[in-house]
Image (cartoon, rainbow, N blue to C red):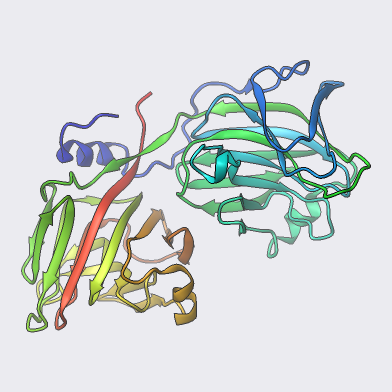
Length: 401
């Protein structure tokens, strides 16, 4: 999508509802597997064996190899994927979605979201694991007993997977399993995993069949800052905002009691935004769904916290509940990089709000009673020496077909 000016971005965002999250019904389901051949698929990673047998793709483990993946040659963005699987009770497996194998990423190792196939007593089939990237579950089934019990050992099971914008939802045999908000990757291939089994020589097998997909297009990041001017934004008194070397730079002396604010001209309802920030001095934040008010604070509304040391990624409501989610100092130390560039994303979908910093979820509200529309704003906190820098301010929008 080519946008001539920052104003066009704002207008397009409003037209799309400012959020790339509505599952449009674009086209019919089409098969990803013809039941006879592996046409349209390629193997990456380890050396497990894949073949077609009785209308199913059969993956068989081999000893002393890494995780193996049979991947679609086509790249997908937003989609609904349905398939059936039957797995050996001693083999771990999974379905990769929005995954990639990039030459400059760990020598092309397959990485990305994996919908877990887990026949062990843990019972996490349908959970979402981040394969070879963050290396942890982004959402497991610890608190979802109905989904854990939905798995049928030694039998065929069915997945439904919906990936739209930054929302990924899964169902196991019709039972809701996961409902994840994560904006790290918007496109990639689909892959069928055979997990490594160490030096075990007896082959273990997993089978997949009736694999079909509904392509819903894709979302992409569109700039809310053109890198040259503050077009599309305006300031409220307090502090100084300017563009230097492609960065938004905000400064303010401790003698300034007002909160200096850089405010979006437009208001937004549902959205996903992200930006990179460097907190050199003082306390800042990304306001959203905020309204302008008279007085030194400038706006009332939610603030995703940005600072040089503490509370980064928490949620504070100015003019309302104060701290709604305040992270623990020991947690902040795990994901925040002081003095360096950090990435923050905020997703607001109806009454659900999710904040992430450097790929770690730092705050989530699932049924928030607060306002549903308002301005974005970047803050310079009053009464302290302030220096913050921002770049790559972007919103997730539906790509043109």
